Amino acid sequence: MPSTSAPFGLRAIYSPMGTTRPYSGQIKSGYAADVFQSMPIRYGLSTDTGYEGYIVQAAAGERLLGTFMGVEWVDATGRQRVGNYWPSGTTGTNIIAYFTTDYTIVYEIQANAALSIDKIGQQYDINGVTGNTTTGLSTAQLDVASAATNAQLRVIGLSNYVNNAWGDAYPIVQVQISEHQNVADRASY
Image (cartoon, helix red, strand yellow):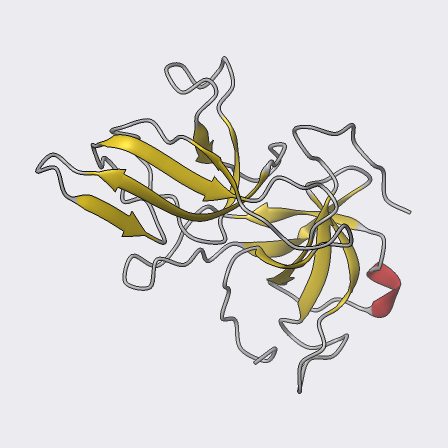
């Protein structure tokens, strides 16, 4: 797997505080962007006119809240819908989005280039807010070229998979959010 680029987004794997539980919030009806499962998300800010306080995609370099886990809503025909992603432009009522918010959660993500063990503690941004509309899964990756003292994600280890090793072309690494919307920045070490 790490010799092939097969991104799956930012997938929550465990919480040092206990069980990884979803938090709920809202996506604004008609939000004109796809929001995929395991996609990094954030709360809309005053610069996101009309989306302040709603869940929106997080782009490279933006502070993160967590990852999107799914959504339920009532469509225009009155039918209850449940999905692992929010299709762009969807309208409805009673919209409930589920996402992670705990800043201690450990996630795994595939890097877009090789990493070595000495990169533990270093920080990187994500690359892209895309996904697959067939599977509903995010295709975000760790952008190895974006290394910085303060970036979105801190590498804390290597995921334990067969054929996943430091130095592989596309390793799967464990990370924590280092630029969290609800917590002060934590610099690399």
